[in-house]
Image (cartoon, helix red, strand yellow):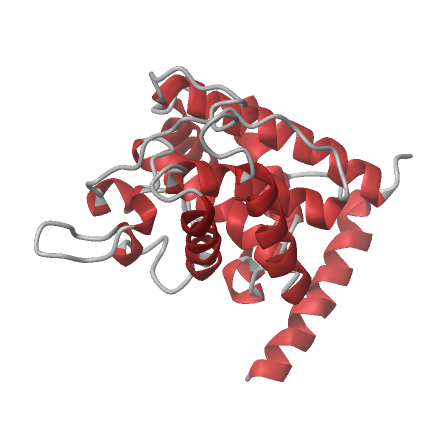
Length: 245
């Protein structure tokens, strides 16, 4: 049996493949890992160090940055539109229910962007920073594998709160999730692979407690196969519920 770390590494590899699929199907520009070699040769190292420092301060930030990248790409491509604040012409995606008070890591991206502006102003896009940050944050927690991130994305000047409202939800059933992913050119296999990103980070028990207590009905598996895992999860959520209430 594979160890937990080996399993997480394999999961991350699949997740990255799916994120790259989203990027390739929604971005028409020619991207290249060497895009900034001539104009900002220190870009990748600057991002790497900024993300490494952020994750060392708060390990959970790795999951938040991966989620930020996914929520950016799933709406209208990997264009950093999720970073845009409200203005007279923008209804920010941050206000959409799936992002409101839950999307995190904006300050980390802003910090890295500020560092890059000092060494090569106006060169590196925020969209590329978000994409590289997801990779570097994952690597900082798991320790591997790494992967090549193609660069050269352009930042959006418009946001779509309405599209962000349709991001996959933890309350969605299987049919709804499959349908939602299909609109992005992704199939059920892709859905399962991307869901593996939830092995990094944390979630409040309130968001999945009902599924745990109905796990036998949902999965319709032999109760003996579920007895161990379901009982442990029930105890964990019960303790959590007692502590916060």
